[in-house]
Length: 182
Image 1 (cartoon, rainbow, N blue to C red):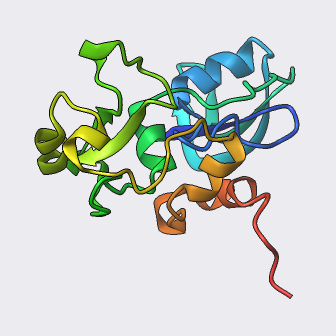
Image 2 (cartoon, rainbow, N blue to C red):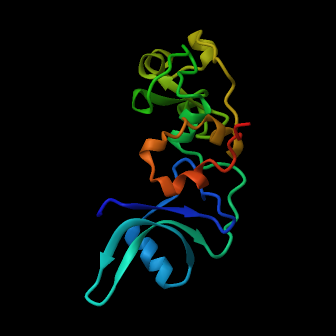
């Protein structure tokens, strides 16, 4: 029971985020319930007990007040890899996130900034080969030009959810915008 997580939905019953998935520790979900900040949507078949009460552990909660989401996604290592489809932008090699690095197209030592438009996913060999040069100087053209993605683009590049990894009470809320079968 100690590792149970609670899916957190916005007031419109959509997850606050998909990457990473908006999760709270079940104890934090209990606290929010008692403070009347969330609505209980679904529970696990597990009870948490105090000396005077036994309550089912929340598996899904929804915020009572709508949280406006940022227009653009956070500039994170994972989101860079997601934007670049977990592929080196120099050689095209597809790797798990642990096998990738990120590279400044215009090196930081030359004034390059850490921005969506200047950072790409790269495998270690390509990153080392490019070194402190521009792609043109290293004769390593980019496969795609880096740009700021939208939340929608990142969501659709997110690896498919494996429904076996999630509690059955979460599934209706994780696939809210999936195409329905006819």
